[in-house]
Length: 183
Image (tube, rainbow, N blue to C red; front, top):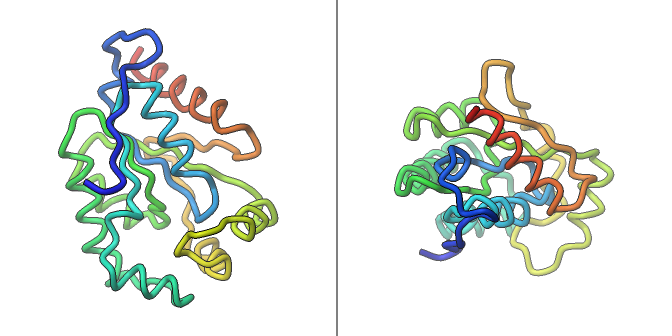
């Protein structure tokens, strides 16, 4: 599958609950979902999938043209993301999952999925988006994503991490949170 990387066992090779996790690393564009997700997957010995690679061509073309996606555009994509999550016991997916209803759809199809929400100031995220090259998501769509974003609710299983920390630190913090949940 495109965008999928099967990573090696975690640092200590233990079979712990973190390594059995189904995790969505979520947030707006340029928050570092793919980088943190790939590193978290490496740490816990999980498969990593970038949900951007699961978008149908029509969605990619729309975003590349600077047109925000509508919910109708996202439902089939989210169904593909959910199928990917349930396809393997240990999976980390980088997926925006901006709205509660999107996360509900993922949870309905993949019970037990948990979320790592990468957060940052609009200024930092805009600077990151402006510095990216070769990504289909133009920086101009960041504001629409920030407007759409619904942070995790108190009843949602997840953790929010500030992206001012380095990728490796964020991945270790996410793994620590997963490990603490397993105790």
